[in-house]
Length: 345
Image: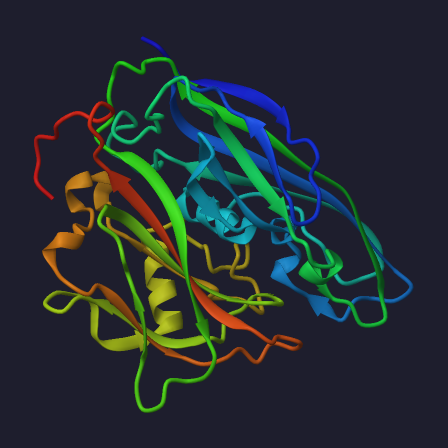
């Protein structure tokens, strides 16, 4: 037996606005998960802030985080999307310490998980991450927003806000059984679509463009003032021949509430990312149902996989940009890294 090791890799150094900060991970192993603990201190003084942005979450301070292999992105989300994914795959709502609008000093803290192996997977042996070359550098990266940091957390109003003591600590879960090959190599990326106006007389389309297998999709509503919940009213997901959700578009809130049964329970409830005003910022879709990889989406089974969205620009105060962002959790078979599977997809 060779149990997984949880190794504290330390704090990411030189976290500077608008620049990628990196920390080395253990390479030449099978990586199952990476945890990033995000912290900051926020002081609100003079007057209360008008309202919160990004739920007052420390994750809202970071525009991206993920993993690099030999300098190439293999996992990339924003801080908020990474935190949502952590809540989504967890069996229960996660602990968080967030900001409020009242005059006070707030110690913000949350953990983001990069789950190469999902908690509900039938076997953790199936999708650990392995580098193409075990001697190549594997790194975690994170980027602090280049904008005024207080604006990522608040509509400030008459308040004075200071954001200090920003940090990120990394833990890697892995084992050394690299000779035991995976079935698939997991990756994650974001496909964004800017919404400039309601589509006249119809729905806005967001295409799923991939040649890899898809284990899950998460559609986020976003803006330049943080996550929102009023960009998409209704949605469907389908190909030219096969309908996954549809054929007619469904109310967004209904879709989100129904998927709580598949993803993390009360993700949209009072303890999760769904507290007002962003009760339904994201809609997840799990294809690895029952933990079975045979259930994942094969893009070759249909053409023109796409979302149909009844969408418009957000009414959030101060917003000048609205978008939807599709998080794609992909799986790939790679010669030399993955073994032959004995099931069809």
